[in-house]
Figure 1 (cartoon, rainbow, N blue to C red):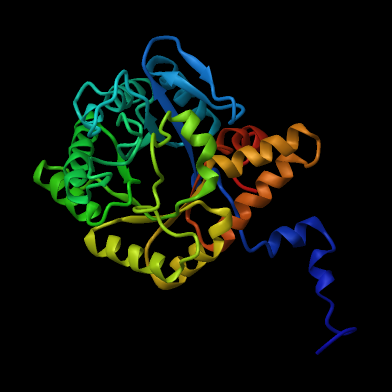
Figure 2 (cartoon, rainbow, N blue to C red):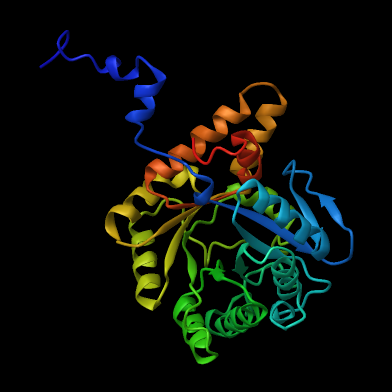
Length: 328
């Protein structure tokens, strides 16, 4: 049947029926808040390009996690800014490194908070690249050793999940073996499986103090033009033992999220990255957009594309806007 018998507007005519036929729901349970741990005490440094986000010392970070948990945000993703850096990133892999200290402090303050730790070397190396440099480029296999040492150190500190973001070949399998050998066979891995060499990461590099000191990351992060390659990366990570796969960034890669969900029977995460967040903030400050409505629409689009988990700097604000309501 066609118009006038069939009228799709009938199911839009009242808010109750609109809610009844709503196809996509975003819950606070879907959201993960990224946080930045830094040295010192009572430190809360504003990140100028990411309004409302901060570099926080471990004591302040633990308090923030308590606030987030009380708001309904039950999981955080941790990035670390070390006291000093080295050529290989090993400063991030010892038991007293910034992330193990942060994990312990958070667990002491709010035991129930689910902590995911990013695993990479860019914050910890003097050159800002994601691994050990040999002949001007990142040496893949040497880097795997450091990454696995980070994973084990974080596991010993009490992390709930590790999330390798480096894009080295074979790192999921190497990390899985290291974790299993150290008795952490139940610790899940959320792999940044399709991480693109994106211009949307700009504000993050201020936040994590991780900008490369030379060149770029195109030899290990993915070409934004490629979709088939993403499927190969994701398939390999699954074969190596990834429990969750991630697409990063989210908004310009909704097609990759959808294709991943349709192709693989596995939970999919998407990272609503710093540049995506900061563009919303900048436009809202100008009064050009309704920030709350835009944010909710963005998160719905990521969920609609197929993401089960959304890592987003909007998480805290969304929880405040919802004021106890679990979904929108």
